[in-house]
Structures are given as structure tokens and as C-alpha cells.
Image (cartoon, rainbow, N blue to C red; front, side, top):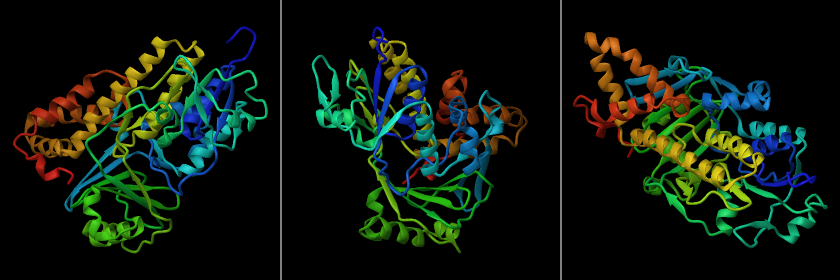
Length: 417
């Protein structure tokens, strides 16, 4: 704190990252204002959580409320082909994390976290914040924004936390470059009243002839998303709805999944997501969540990384916001993303589930039968988030096996096209 004056924090954005960092800082004694217009797309990517999110919900005291409107998620089901389906349960990881997560409607989830921030004493301003550059790598709120806060920041703003998501307010103002990933896919998704589900509560991820899809069972509907290179959509229409509807009708597997079902929401397009800021912080500002970067929707990492960054930054600011601590936050975040990218790449290049095919073949011999449970446990820990936060053995095993133990099986068969 600055002498006897309570330090102030302006949080740009009231999504999960913004609401979480605001709650934590308010409870540490900071005066926190959240700029949140409430405007949002009808649907948002990030409806399926990882077990690694559950401890954070517990620390915020909101798990029971989230549970009340969410679907219990015990694991994941992956369809490789018409005759190959894999079911994996989080309980097989036998790690330190809970053996479940939730599939959750994002409007209710986000509102729960925002209300939690209000309960902690944060004030929400229904405006977009404008920022200006100050000297010495500092930024501030512009005069028009300050006028709309009715004196809340009359003593100035000590910290600005950018949780504005893909708007990336600070990065755009500071002209911070981004590092882009190799994939340029689009995600088109909508909710349906009914979609075929194999395993109750599991997120379902399926290889398609072109691209891949997710099926996320919510309490009263199913989220169906298609992730695909946009060049494959040209023949399917000019609008997102035309492309989505036509592609669902034209793909044999998607027709089977949606038989007897009806789309009940608009189609939302999500693209250009593989972007990570080159720089996360300055003298009095820091980026968290998607405002810092996003990698890919395939393993449900987005919301986990957003909330984890909020917890980390709250601790850094509360401890004084030293540059070394901010640098460590950025370094650790980028290290973790590098690990996740390696796992995600093994999905797209086909090596991850080619390893499964190789493992099934090897499990028929005596040695394979012995090591199969060990391998399954450690690979499961990668996908719960346990391996990222714990020992490097599970991560190393994934990298080693997907590189050297495919036993002649060709990963090209499972490359996402």
C-alpha cells in the first residue's frame, strides 16, 4: 500500500479472468473497479472446464453455485473413426486434482464470478475504459473514463489489469506485437436441443474428414462446434450460419451426431486465436487471460489459463508488483503454453492417438499389459492439468512416447486436415 492510502486497481473486462483477479485483490485490501459493458456474443468458447479449475472455484467459494447449473464432467470421449472410440476418465490420473470438472453455460458461469467480485467489494462500471500513455512505461485512464467513475479513482490508478480478452486493449494501445501460431482454423459453433452423446457428461472430440468437432453436453442442450481450415468452408456458403449448417449436413459423422436434433442458437464464429503477446507487463499494468494470449480450444485450456493467470497476478500485485515478479509471471505463463502447445501439436499431427493405436497393439503382449496402466495414468495427468503443475515425468513421457513409440503406425492417418 502507498502510505495510508488504499491502492487502486482498474480491471479492464469482467469475464472470468477479470472477475477473479478483482475478487482476489479486493479481498487483499485493494480498491478495485471493473470496467465491464455486459456486451457479449451469444456464445463463448470455453464451456468445458479442466479438473485444474476446480481448486480455483473452491478458493473463490463458488463451486457449489457453478455445480448447480453445470453438467458433471468425468472425462473425455474421442472418436478416431467410425469404429474407433476412446473413453478416458479423469479418475485414471490418480493425481492431486479432483477427478471431475464441469461443462458449464458461460453466461451463467461468467455472471457468477462477476457477482462474486461485487460481493468482495468491487465496483462495476458499465463502460469501456479508455487508456492513455504516461511517462516511463506507465499508462492511465483517460479523462473521459475517469469522469464516468464519479470520483472512484480520484486519487489516481495504481494498477491497470487488462482482462479485456481478445480486445487486447493495452496491447493494441502499446502496439505490442503478438506471436502467432501455425494454425489458422476457424471454430463455428452453436447449441442444439439434442446431439448424440456416447458417454454421459464427457466432452466428446471427434476427427472429421476435414477438421474436427466438439460435442459438449450441458444441462439442457449440447454445444456442437466445428474447427476447420476456412479454405474448406468456401463451398459451404458465405455466412457463418450457412457454412455451419451446410457443413453439418454434408459431413457423414456430423449428420449422424445431429440426427433428430435442432440448432437452437445463432452460429458463432471464433478465429485468429493462436496469438500470444510478446510482452505482458509494464510499470503499472499487466495483461491476463486472453488479453495475454490464447492457444487452441482442443483441450479446454483457455479458461484454466485465464483463471490461473488471475490468481498469479493478484499475488504479484499484492506483494508490491516488483518487475522481477512480473517477469517471472510472464516467463512461467509462456513456459506452460509451450508445454500445452506440444500436446496440442500431437493432436493435430496425429501422433497422440496414433500412440493409442500402437498401445492397443502392444497391450496384447505380456510386457504391454504391465506398462499400459502406467502409461494411461501419466497421459491422463497431462489432460487434467496435473502434469503441468507437478512433476515433469508425465509431460516427458508424453513427448517421448509420441515421438519414439508408434511402432510403425502412420500418424498421417490421424492428421487433422
